[in-house]
Image 1: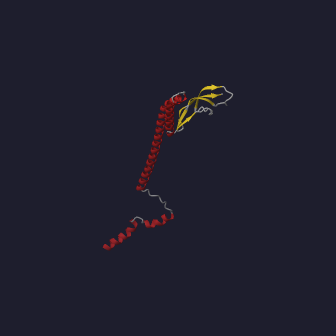
Image 2: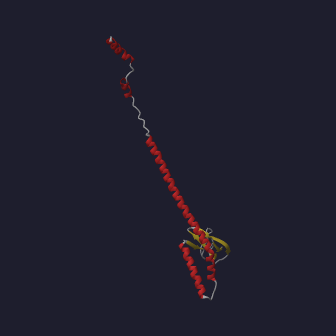
Image 3: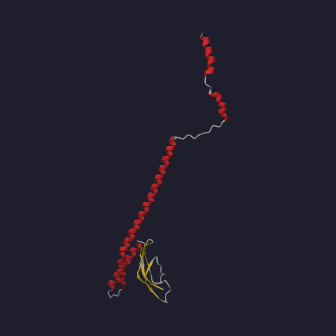
Length: 181
């Protein structure tokens, strides 16, 4: 009876068995199989972390540049403010030099003080402008008087009431002048 059962199993087995993939393989070989890139989770994480680091580095670099610029502006503003507060001293020394005096020692002391102040201005990058004979520039000069004169060219400074000062391209005080028409 064992032989009969094995024969029956052999007969039933091919009918009941599912089709094997070996028979289907020739059909799949005819179709090209698209290769899908396998997304590696570690690679994705690396790329996102790398991008985050690059953005953080760029943000830090921008922060560093911005703070350096702000520091330079703050220093420039402080320097301009200090020069502005010293301008009345300059004006008083200039007036003292223009006054006649018989005391030579006094005059020499005022000249030395003015020379020292101009030396300090030079070390701070202060430029003095507004001389007689210069062309009038409304961006630098404040015309407080006009003079109708044939001996001077038009828009030429004929008299300076107060000199102008610049610190690093920033005008600290406009020159007050008289201009020929």
